[in-house]
Length: 139
Image (tube, rainbow, N blue to C red; front, side, top):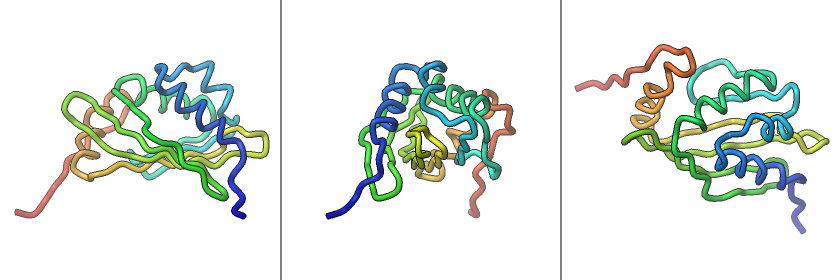
């Protein structure tokens, strides 16, 4: 029999929080103090509850974000989503690692496809204090 990662309810609470507008207080309850966020927008992770809350609210509060499924494996949980701002749409996945207390200790976010991901970053760059990206191709 396969054993599954505990605390799936934490991930389901996260998804519900994001669907309800990324409420800061509700998210604070389920994020570990030293949570780390690895995102598609930069090389360096975002660390600490306050900084991660700002990043999550900056993205979730300015977009149409719909989670479609929560997955549970032996060690991690994941949630599939669709993120849209204006006419730019990305499909993505959040991968969660939870601590022993059931709080989110680590989140890794992936987006696809690349052209839409670059366009999404351009939408969010100002909110997140980043330079907008440009997709360059040969041809």
